[in-house]
Length: 355
Image (tube, rainbow, N blue to C red; front, side, top):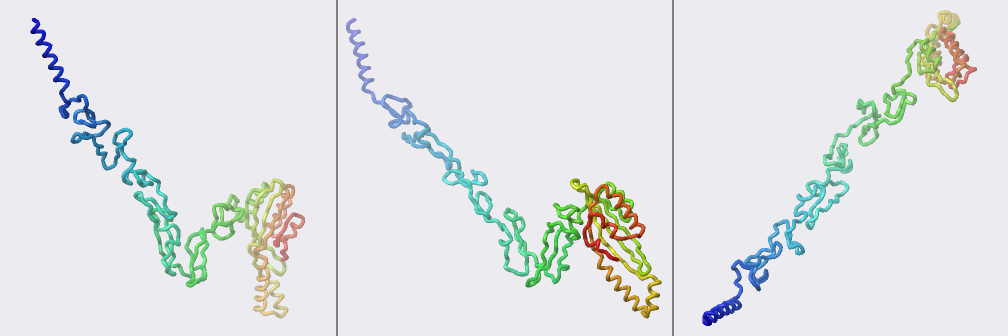
């Protein structure tokens, strides 16, 4: 019995001695005592994303657009590796997307600053005096240069572009050149009404004025309320010597609330003069020939033509309108005398008429 116990003890002791003397084996897939990633990564593996190759932990391949982060021990992607990774107005520099800063006449195209064709007319100068150099769609990607043959001229009429909104001018040069200036000022009788004008300062504009034509009653009705209106008054003013066909333009231009007056304009439009048959006979009896009389009549017409275009204006108070209409009634009946308005607030060379 003692021998069996002794034998068992020797066996246990032998096992302990053999175990304590055994060395770790690298590559057996068992992480044994004394093994770590630096001595046997084949059994222990590597930290992070390091890869164990030939029993050595090496940094992993992070690809063409990645890098290894030593702090996290991981592969990370760069923000950008090419311009295509950035927005259209940026470029990739040092793996960062940077805003492109282009020149004053450049645009961004495919992540690059590229020169525009033109930004003003000077950029299109072809050094040819016979052409007009223009930059169309300036400072845009669609900009392009245009070289049009110069519009030459001798007079302003050669420059008519059939556009009411432009003033067509022939400018002296070598050769003379047409220019077309956009009309921006309010001006009567130029055939165009700019956007900021109205009939009160440009008669080419549409207005709310009632055109009574030759209907004087229409004008008188408007005068009672001082509403805007105009009329052409035709009169036959005759005496023993002369027969005068006189046309006067009258226009109610507005009511002044502060002064309580109605403004009316007057203008001689046309005056034709003819000698009466009695007067012609008198002149011939006095020694004139028919030709002499015709010359006298023509000279008389020339004198009266000087009145054409003469104008004046009046400001009638509310309590004066009835008297004004009475004067107009006399004129309608061919009893015409500008002195009828001497007692009113009137001014202008229209009232200097002495026919």
